[in-house]
Structures are given as C-alpha cells and as structure tokens.
Image 1: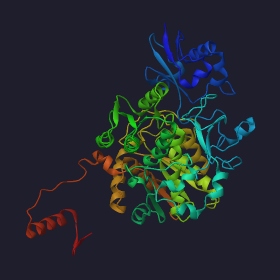
Image 2: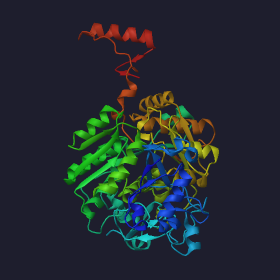
Image 3: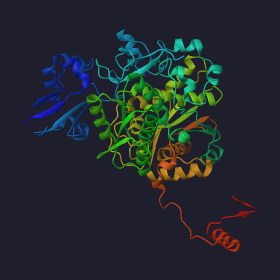
Image 4: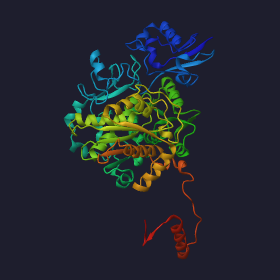
Length: 126
Length: 423
C-alpha cells in the first residue's frame, strides 16, 4: 500500500527541497509521524507548543478535504494522492483565543505588533 | 508619501521584508502587512486626506504600496447613503448603506483589494497574475490587469453566473473553469502558485490584497464626518473584509483621526454556506468546513481562510452573526431595490436580510448608527430574479390603450394613478 504525498513550497526550507514522498501510512496520524521521521527538521515547525499539528495546515485526499472523509479515521487507499496545504490567509491560532495574537507574541519576545492595528503596544484585545 | 511597511506572521510574529509571500516559513501561519503608523502619523491629517484623490488612494499612506506608486485605477470612494425607507421597513431609524455596488471599475468591493494587489504585482515584477474567484474578484483582476498590461489566469468554479464569466472574459483574461466548488479552486491555485512564478492576488499576494479592504472602513469613518458607527453589518465569504474594516477603524483611532468608541461587528452569511456564522452561534473556536449550497455564490466559501479571525473579531466586539435562506436573499434584493434604489447581487441580499433579522431579534437597537455594507452589483446575478416579474403583453402606442392598461393594473394590483406620478 502506497500513497503519494505532495508537500507545499513553504515546507521546503525544512525538507532539503523535497516536495514529494511516497508513504505506506494507513491514516493521517501515521502519515504525519512518517513525515516527521523523514524530515526531522520539520517537526518543530509542524506542531505547536502543545504538540498538536497546527490547525491551519490542511490535508486533502484526491482533491477532497480530509475532514469531509472522516479526518483521522479515514483509511488511506492504495494510490491515494495526499496534498498538504497551509491555509492561505488564516486558520486557528495555535495558542487558542488570544484576541489579536499580540500577547502571545510579546510573551515569546518575537514581535509585539498587533495583527489588527499594527501598533506595537495596542490594546485591541481589551 | 507612503508609510513603510513589512510582513509579519500573525501567529509567531516573525517579520519579513516586503515580498510575494503569504505563509510564514517557520510556523506555516498566514502573514499580514504591518504599516508603520508612526511614520504615517507625521504627515497624515484629516485635511491631507481630504485633499487627496476622490478614490481609495486618498489613504495611500496607509496602504502597502511603494512611496512612488502612481495609481492607475480610481477604485473606491463609493457612496455612504442614509437608508430611511429600508430603515422604516425593518424597524430602524439610523441605518446607512455603504454602496460598493457602484465601486469602479467592475462594480464590487473587490476592485479595492485588486488595486493594492496588482500595484505590488508590478513592483515584484510579475508579468502574469491570477486568482481563484467566486466571480467578483475575477472581474476585478481581469479589468485592472488589462489596464496594467498584465497577463491573467483566472480560475473559477464551473457553475459561476454567466454574467460574471462574461465580465471576466471581455477583458481578454484567460478564464479556467474548474469542475468543483471554490474550495477546490482555491486549493488548486495554492498548488499553481507554488509551481509558477505568477502573482496570485489571493495566494502569494494575499497580505497586500487584504489590506485594500481597509479602505471600506476608512471611507465609512470619513464619510460619517470622521466618527465611527455603532454597528457594521458585513457579508462574509473568506471572512477577511470584516476583520479589515475593524483594522481600519483601529488604525484611524491610533492615528488620532477619529475618537475611539466601541463598534460592534455583525457578520452575514447564507444558510447554505454558513461556517463562520455557525462558529459564532455555537461559540466554537474553530471553523467546521461546509459544502456550499446557496445561490449566494460570491459568499460560497465552505472553508473560509479568515473564518477564525472573523468569528473572533465579531465576538470580541460584542457583535453577532446570522445566516439567511435563499428565499430571504431574493426577497431582500428586491426590498433594497424597491426602498433605496440600490440593486445588489446575492451577497447584498444576504447582508440586507441579515440586517433586517438583527433588528427584528433586537440585536441592534433602532437608534444606533448602523452601516450595512453592500459589496456587489445586482446586474451580475440577474439569474436569481428570473421569473420574478410578470411580463405583460405589449400594448399599442395609443393613449386609450394605455388608460385601459392602467385601469387593468389598478384593478389587479391596486396600482394608483395620481396625476403624472405613479407612486
């Protein structure tokens, strides 16, 4: 049993340029584990701080969103083509409901711009 | 002079210099433009804006375009009109309509976002641009790309309204009809953008594109006399517009151009494609994708990219979201046309019907200053009105025939003839 997995361009920095793998994984959790084993550098980017796969990474099987097929319960069929595509514009915040993503950024010391007003020290979320 | 700007990851905060990128390479989250408001504050005043062009480019300093960019398309600066007759019909007393049904050049608010996206496409040196579209974006990209001399590949769901297909092809665009819904089209565009060195306005140019929506919010505030409304009702497809109107208001407050005040945001969807309103109603922190089944094709995005952000903006503001049936959508198109002389497409029917429901359910108080955003023109979706109006047989060009006609109509429809005015 083999499925073809197409990876997005955004992953390439962490996959030595690889854009495609063949996998024998039976379902989505097994596939994600296999991707992480194949590309160890990708693992910390693929999952959030709590170890969950980032919710804005979408998986499609033969052009269909895997969530319409049962998501993790879907059993891959031989010859399936799996697409991995990050949401273009949005998705769920990895850290849950932080109003504008600002505080979590400040906490991490990375960036404290508000994603809505763009100010460094705004109070949009208050 | 335009302010400095850069890209910033919405989740991890990593910064990027301006580039045709939409996804963070560290956490694969969406990127957003951040405009340097401190720099803008030095030069921007109400007077300097008022002295600018009668288009969305009067806010150029708050948009991500190069300092020396000379706009070629005067999009935006659409009317903000009071809607007293509609207001009376639905139990409101202070209702306004932001009418992007007459946005130039292609009669939808998408002209705004495309204007910013293609300005950047030129800057980045793309000779070919494209998009995935439910129709209005296709029209806007095709028209403005023609004006800029760019080649175009535009991908749309195969069941798109005939008018929206024609209004794309007439500009010489290459239109690719995809056997699937918008979400299928969008996924394919992501793959194409990965493979080809093209500027896809809602893929690799998306951070720039999305900023164009802010001009709806800037205009509402300026046209209200530099003040913010109490409520805004906004149609939701991908969910970007409602978040960008909110961002616009926040920027104006930060710049000292308007007084800060609470503004509640209300989202409108069709019941046949309501992933965001469902999330708002159920309090979910994620979006469950849906398979669209509605006549409001321009809102038929079952997996909205900005859905979570839109739902969050609505909840944080104390607003709400509603969804309405296809029958209600058509009725609302007719009601808006009959009361205010504004002919909107199905998305505007959604927004109008949802606005009425928000008043009916007491979620909006009649006296509050409420702006309903009409985002597209009814001439693009005339198919939904097929059969809606009876066509009487032609009469001879004789006064007697006309008087008979009027008498018959009066009898049938209680049509009243008063002097030369038929009211």
